[in-house]
Image (cartoon, rainbow, N blue to C red; front, side):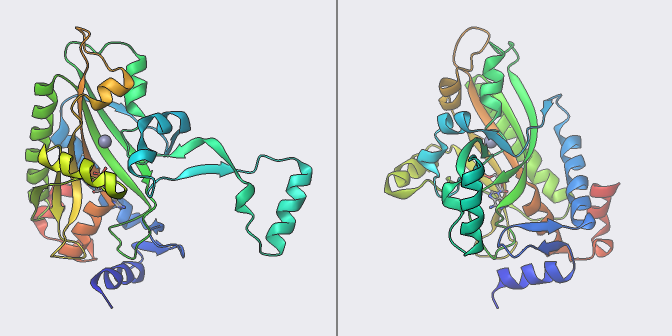
Length: 301
Ligand code: AMP
Ligand code: ZN
């Protein structure tokens, strides 16, 4: 059995994650949730910079999702919500279809909702609608379940997982400074809970051959960094935080303007909450009462 499956099985056996029969789709125990809640409080303490708190549900406007260009870059990861939109006759044929075991899903129609792929996606058009940003720029605190179609036996690669994000909108200098400050805070936070990390340059998993160029460009320009912690592999540690600088790409796309009318630069910092909880369980053991005192104190006071 490989390391990923054995860790997943141990998490199931301990009741921390609950099997649903679908890889990457799990229930969570109260204990698992308590670790995430405690870690989020730790994030709050480190943040301390009056970000505006906004919470979106895990589904977003399909129109905004389409405009975001997600299907161009990551069609393999996207999830859309489809529903039955027919009348009574269609309902009868649907039931017949299900009864005989045929594919009933082909007649489902796309709704106006797509599953949120990253917590910050619904934010940019929302803020653009408000008009120009104040002179101080914008700082936002987000958290959402996110969907990515990447079924896996690796418990650190889930299909529905939570991302806590901070997003900064402002001048190039403001947002790159914001990103750097979170890289420093990220290292300190993980140190406080007893996790060894490395930060490395990274790229998003752009689709296909054309995507390779985008990925190379992203790396060459240092647009994405990740904070890595070994969870199910030491050779390939898992990204538990990401630090993304979008330059003025989202500002231009969504019409985000600074108070002088220039295009805003943006950056976002994402915490993978399940991955952080899993890193803690992997390193300190499945019984939280046995965790190192310093880590327990950082989390629960
Ligand atoms: P990304 O937008 O890909 O940089 O993702 C932001 C953060 O979400 C990553 O640093 C991970 O911690 C977390 N994440 C991404 N994909 C997954 C996944 N499939 N399962 C769990 N966490 C994930
Ligand atoms: Zn983001």
